[in-house]
Length: 312
Ligand code: KMH
Ligand code: ZN
Image (tube, rainbow, N blue to C red; front, side, top):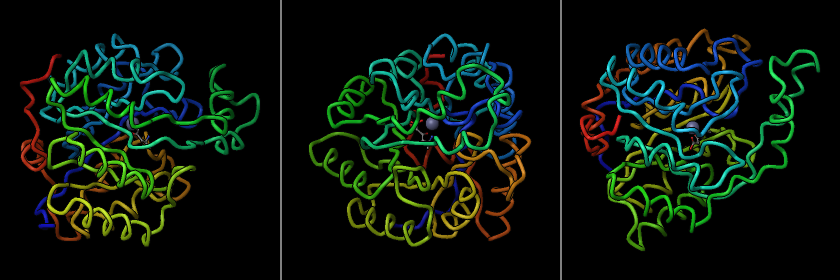
């Protein structure tokens, strides 16, 4: 495929894996999510991938009203592209998961491309029984070894059918090689407009591991399946975040950072904020001779509908 000239930095602000005990920097109130999102955009992120949390206890929320508390504030303060998650919670129906995107019609939303184990239970070993800030956290993390992250072909079609009228570009979350073939199958039956945007995800327990060999294999497979019909980005979980992002940018891809994917800024050191991670990857990308895309450049590269076409 043709090599792109600029690198789009996506920042995933809070997600649904980490819990408040794990880092004081993890945002969960509307003020903190909005503030950190705006700061991440100012630091160089052109796309903001957003989940909501219950502001009282930081638990994962799919309630559109919780999104309503921060989306307009981010839009007023930045020109960044808003991307709303449809991955949401591992425990809820696909209909609940798409409710926020249906209501707010963002420029982008995530779409997970296969069912899988999705576990972060081993994170619980780092904390003693008395360490947890909120009641729900320990069980939520420990029980993740029982979760099946459900994204059947029917679910994928449900998302596409419901959101197609909104002209939303999907961030196709691919956690393993088979997910690329799932996406190819969907495109062959007429779903999704090219160029599709593929997020290669490494290092989630249940998905492919975070080795550079795997990134090369995923990229080569996607080139073969999609040719010029796709754009790509890389997300490495935990300690693989920065090394894989740096490698991806050198391979001509886009990158995703943020506290959703890693709580750290370097080995053993917690990040102070999402913006700190964005500033670090921006510095790396530029030091290595590439340029970071502005929000409007990202819109052009990913063929987005425009920031004036959203419903918030
Ligand atoms: N938490 C990431 C590994 C989603 O929001 O749809 C994947 C993700 C899923 O971002
Ligand atoms: Zn997410």
